[in-house]
Amino acid sequence: MNGVTEQDIAGAVSRLPALPNIVLELIHALDNKDVDTHTLAQKISYDQTLTAKVLRLANSSFYGMQSKIGSIPHAITVLGFNSVRSLVLAAAVVDTFANHASEDLDHAHFWKHAIGTALCAKAIAVHRGANQDQSFIAGLLHNIGRLVLATCSPLRYRDVLQRCAQHDEDLLAAEIHVFGIDHKTAGKAVLEYWKFPAAIVGTLVSGQEGAPAQGDAAAIAAVADAIAYALDLSGGQYDRVPSIPVADWDRLALKESVLLDIFATTEMQFEEACAILGATGKA
Image (spheres, helix red, strand yellow):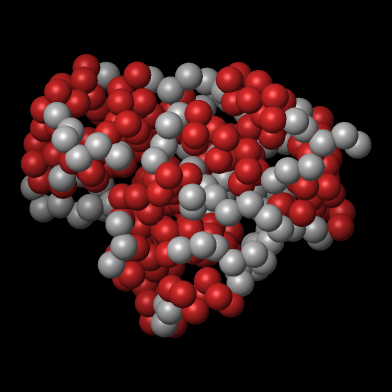
């Protein structure tokens, strides 16, 4: 079976739903120190559906605020622009892809896992003193390349999932066997297309399962991905817990008590976050 080419991937990326302009502006602002937060807040507020989801998240157990947050400017004042931006990106990306699903790659399962990974990555970042918002975004988009491959060839991606189920093979290895590349490589293509900063693109480490991540941010995303699968948050038919290299566990140095706290935090926030973001459906 012939592998996919760069042109195939580029074509699949271009066929993905277009992100709203405000989201593209927020992505650009991730690497911009001179951000006009007032203007961006106004633009976010123009999208009533997006604003409603962001405010529901801001007032949820995700932050545990004592007083109600009633507007995007208020949320920025209380939570900070970076936190609001990560919530907007999450709400907009999940909503944009809500109806973009193949028969085998169910979007509810996919986004439930993505949200679980994002929450877990943020919880890990808290304990590591890392950038919580960047970790949340990286976790959310960690497996975005699966959508690219499924868009590139739905029939081939069905073969990938069947291969995983029949041979108990890890997902990355099955993708490489069928497509010639894995979803991390495809994910980098879509994040670069959306012009995400290198710090987030770099969290997607291609190669077969077991290859150590490069840097704390990549290790956080990889470990969060494995934990989200281990907690069985999405309930997906083909879910399989990937093995994490000892080097990544050693890099993060998460003690058992810390891991238990991360598990509890992720599970506590998961159902509410999925309901607000619209990642519901069969499980």
